[in-house]
Length: 93
Figure 1 (cartoon, helix red, strand yellow):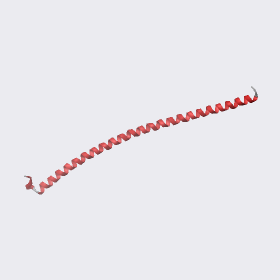
Figure 2 (cartoon, helix red, strand yellow; figure 1 turned 135 degrees about the vertical axis):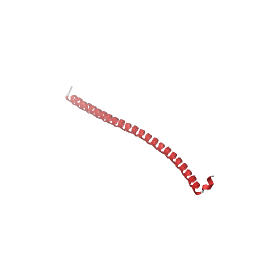
Figure 3 (tube, one colour; figure 1 turned 90 degrees about the horizontal axis):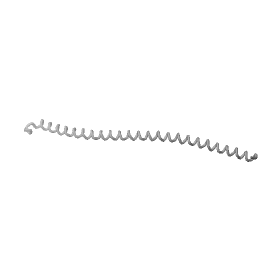
Figure 4 (cartoon, one colour; figure 1 turned 30 degrees about the horizontal axis):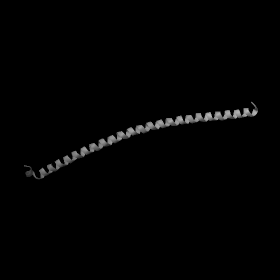
């Protein structure tokens, strides 16, 4: 090989080496990003579970509220009857 061929070969080796280093660096970045995406996916899944549990708790609270409201209505009606009976003792019998 002549001097020019040796120089071109060295330049080619340098370019190939730089390309290899760039590929390795890119692979490491992609691996880190993939790991971060996995972490985010796990967090999103956990938040999904928490949202489901929260919505279930809100539904239970609403059902309990409805039941309590119905009992308060019954109690109010009973108190109205009691007050009416006290105010007019002859009307009940």
